[in-house]
Image 1 (cartoon, rainbow, N blue to C red):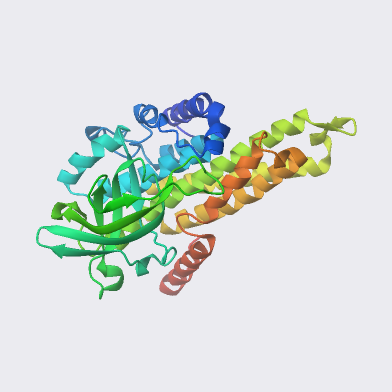
Image 2 (tube, helix red, strand yellow):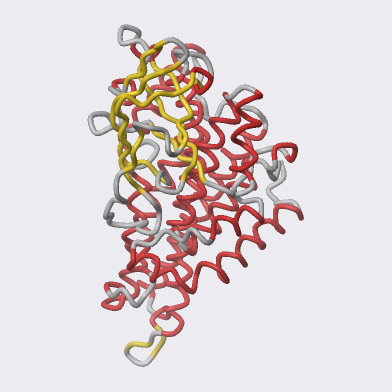
Length: 389
């Protein structure tokens, strides 16, 4: 058992850390205040291989694994979670779904542009009626000759205003429940497909989040992604890996807030000494560091298991739940250490405190993850008589 990152992994981490500090950090608050998606960063990230992380080189990708991906998302999110969220939705959801379940023609058509950062991918599962209960989605796709006709609405979708390709889950058989859902690639500009205005959000305001509308949106038959009726099950598989990226996103936010807090504790003085000389403040810093390290171990374990081809449904859910709740606690404590300045936008921890809440909601709420984890634990116990730990 080796807990050391390889030289190549360390080099990737350091490259992304430098990029985030030089290209993103100087403009973080400007992006946030203007709710401005930094589209100029997309081709730059493409050049670094950050938008085709899992994609083999033959399709224009970087050919990296989940461990490298977790490092990338952590480093971006430690500076600006909006960028981490954009890259996560593009890689592990939209692009990964097309690459994993698409046929060779679809891979050749869509993947190279996505991997090179010439455009972004979006992934549309959630609907106004159905967030956690994804199997009840109402968007429909009916077959008419050599076309599929989509009707419905999606919400809380990341990247849609800047994506040329969106993976959309729709119901193709109203009588088949989960087995009646299929996936499609919808290209930007398709008649009947429109994207709403960016939503005005609490946090991660520089990421693009919007609603999608489908009104008799006609797609060629070849835009069916994977097998008909397998869309829901494929989406759940994609989400299992995607939760590792959200865990890494939360880990990055927690680390970013912590780094600002510990530096501030060394600069700020009260009652004649640095505030980190007070035991209550030092205890906060210690607890924060320990929790971050525990979260990192869970993220890297889940990522390593994914790279080994193992089922990570349980471990990814655990990592995402732990890191999202941990990050909420740590950003709150970072604000507390800054005191009144933590409440002011000119100081960095206020933004982390707003951004972090997405972690307990996106790609499976904490409540849904507890249900999922509990189901797996009890199922394993009943089937094997052992506890999966």
